[in-house]
Length: 233
Image 1 (cartoon, one colour):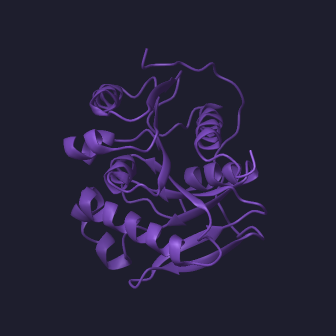
Image 2 (cartoon, rainbow, N blue to C red; image 1 turned 180 degrees about the horizontal axis):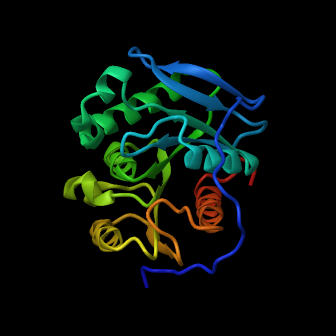
Image 3 (tube, rainbow, N blue to C red; image 1 turned 90 degrees about the horizontal axis):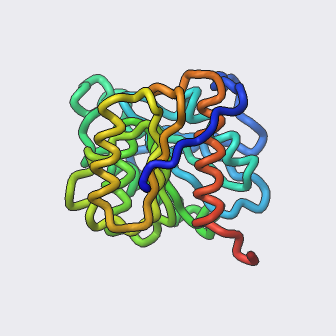
């Protein structure tokens, strides 16, 4: 079956990021200088680029929490603002999936050109509209090894992108997220790549309920570990 429920466990909240960890630095991505936070733990096996949604950005407390846990699992992370401050003033840009996807591709090109990240395999972690943007950006790009979508809108990627996607994709949705479950199921059925849809019991759209974000972390770590294996594994 497409749906695999997960038992509730753990109680960890998403705290805010006040200071950068020692393995992180602020960077400017691409010619337009998108603000970003790049973190590379020792012996990183790959890098996960975060696609934020609904006007969120590199300081998103939930995505920073997830990113910190992914780094503990051996993955570098890049959290970036997909829009410039001026672009954020126009709310239409927040839902412009083509624009957001173009910024993710720009980030991939930047990672491929940077000496510190050029050797790392690439993956996306998308949230909300960022899930759709990640799928649109990955469609037709063989450099993307895996995608995880948290409470995402993969349907916004469009039928062509869903059908042509080759990167293994994990769709994580809260069991209380209503219509978003149906939208993810429809997107799952439209894909031809390796994919899985998982419902997290008792979780809403933002995964604010105790322990639910930890379940997202566990699922994402498992997915990325399987699809971005260590080179000597």
